Structures are given as structure tokens and as C-alpha cells.
Image 1 (cartoon, rainbow, N blue to C red):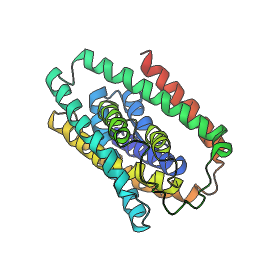
Image 2 (cartoon, rainbow, N blue to C red):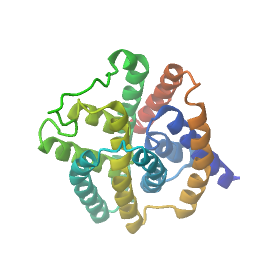
Image 3 (cartoon, one colour):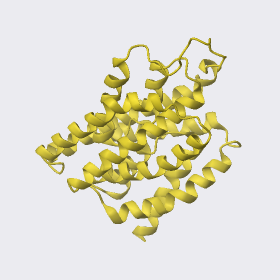
Length: 264
């Protein structure tokens, strides 16, 4: 019975991610901790490899349509991958199962989920008014050129550490960072970059968690098995769902989950 519940959890998260675009970590990790009683370090590590598998499929779709700005992916990865390795080294040194480490993971995860809730609510209520129009750019403008060369590395490092510690941050937080760094980049390519750079980040972080024993492999298989039909159904319904209502409800659920993590 428990196995079937995990399959349904993977299907639910895959469905919501495909329907709304909200990162799966902000849903899956709190669900594993509170819904199934999984230890925070195991929930984070398992969700990282779950995210790597699901985001790889999205990256291939965007790559076929030539929407992935690989220069942007490379710039962010220069910061995020070393930061992920450094965070893994610290976790390995202090012990991921230590109560103090578990509390840091839970608290940081709660803050990250609350940030995701705020970004989701903003997009639901004000996103249409603030949405950019992809106007043609002057010939001399390179949309993949950041405001300053060091900013993608620095902000990528911050996201890399956050994702490695909590499995949250490569979705809503990543999009916000990309919009700030690359204001001339069309929205479709922003989304493609966000999904593409998250693949090596979540893979490196997930394999690092596996090396320190923070992966539940049977659980990972059940979640991935459920995610495939969930993603398929969500993608089919995304054009018909009332996005503003769905995102508003989702933001409230995320805010509740984030608050429980922070004040646990």
C-alpha cells in the first residue's frame, strides 16, 4: 500500500509541475518529509535525482526546438556546480544525518518553499501585467550577455548551494534570477535555460547525496514510475486549466508547507 502511495505522489508532483511550471522540489520534498515521514536528508537526496530525471526530458524537448541558450547554461553552471560540490563536502564532513544538520536542512527548505510560494503567487496575480513582450532586439544586442560577467557565476553558486541542501531553488528562484540577469532573453528561452542548467546541477548534487548515503533507491524508482503519467496528463491539460486559480491555490499550499518546515 505504501508503494502505491509513493507512485501516486510522483504522479501528483509530475502533474502539477507540467500544469503550472512550479519546481517539483518545492512540492516533493515537503511531501516526503511530512506526508511519509522520510528523513530530511533522504528526502532531499532522493528528490534531486527525481528532478534530474524529469528535467532531462524537458531539456531534450527544448533542445529539439533550439530554444536552449547553452551559453547561459554554461555561465550558471560555472557557479552552481562548484558550489554544489562544496556543499556536499561540508555535508559529508559534518554528517547528513546529524540532528543539527537535519534542522538546518528543514529550516532552509522551509525558507526556499516560502520564496517559491511568493513567486508563484506573484505570477498568478501580477504576472500577466508584468509579463514581458518578446520584441525584436537590435542587431548589436546579445541577449545571452549578462549585465556583468561575474553575476551569473555568483548567483549560480547561491542556487547551487541552495539546491544541494534543500532540492529547491532551480525552479521559481532560478527563473527570477535569469529574468534579472538576462532581461533581453525571450521568456521561452528563459524557461529552457532554467530547466537545462538544473539537469547537471541536480544530477551532480543527487549523485553526491548518493555517495554519502542520502538516497532511498526503491523510493526513487516508485516516484519516477508515477511521474511519467502525471507529466503526460498535466501537459495535456495545461492549455485548459485556469492558471491563475491553480497557481493561487498552489501558492497557499506551498506557504503552508514552508511555514510548517520553518516552525517545525
